[in-house]
Length: 162
Image 1 (cartoon, rainbow, N blue to C red):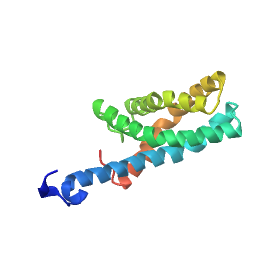
Image 2: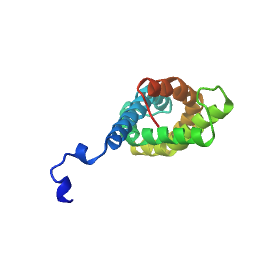
Image 3: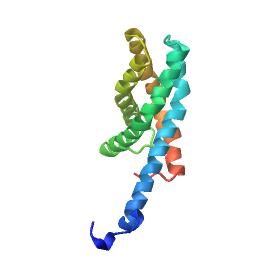
């Protein structure tokens, strides 16, 4: 570092647009992550119970899912944004295209992650297979409403910027 910048604060070294972009990235991360965790925890816990996981396994699974979602929920949000842009989709429109984008993105991002969560919680192969099948069915029913009626409005209300 040269003497010209010596002693300057981080904010002085970064231009204002970089700071704004960094803060927006943190906000977007928090929006995507908290929305996914809060919305899906009770749904998935119920499904896991129906697939024979005991209380300890469900608690371990939900805690693991919250930890994993701290990384993966933002990946899901960015992938959803990318797929909508790539396929020229208007998320506000009611269409089979939007349903397929929202559902496919949810299943594509979360199925392998969810399998790992269940195995780490001590689930058996048959329990994992049943839970993944049921999880895909749940995504088929909930991914579009989640993206359109929960995540989308929260992003808009909280000034999400792509």
